Image 1 (cartoon, rainbow, N blue to C red):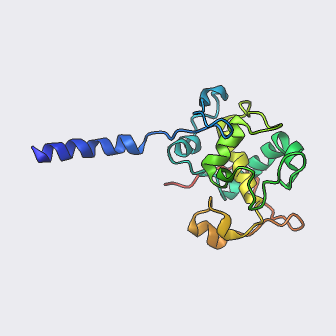
Image 2 (image 1 turned 90 degrees about the vertical axis):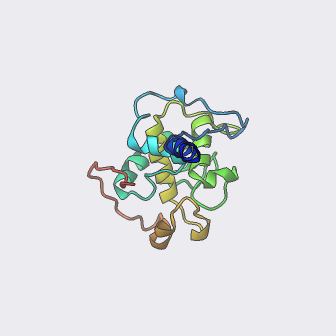
Image 3 (image 1 turned 120 degrees about the vertical axis):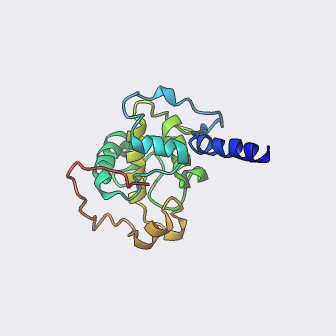
Length: 182
């Protein structure tokens, strides 16, 4: 009998491990309804992985950064500046966060998707995959203390080079953007 109970309990582990996280509005704390975003780009491998883990798989994937840069320049730079230095919106390239939860990928996603106080409205116009690409670009622009870059894995922290707008690194723009295999 105990063996059957253990087997039944163990059979539930994959289902629990695959459950999606709950995302919350940065301002109100209410659960987010992700159905507001376009359907296209909501079922990519990166989005699926992110919704399960809250970790952006595009972070420091060099082949994905040009797409993130293009999207950031189109959707975000008017308020946050060309290299996320801040204009009428806050800077995003250092270790100060208006909303401390934005130091995590999950927190930044929640703020971008549902908006923030003042002038930043929700970005339901962007595909979920596009938000992840933009976030990867913003993280790439970071120039603060490496120990504060909690979104980087320990391996990524060892090789991460702070962004220098005076000496930007040339990125591959071959159109290949693939997340690493898990």
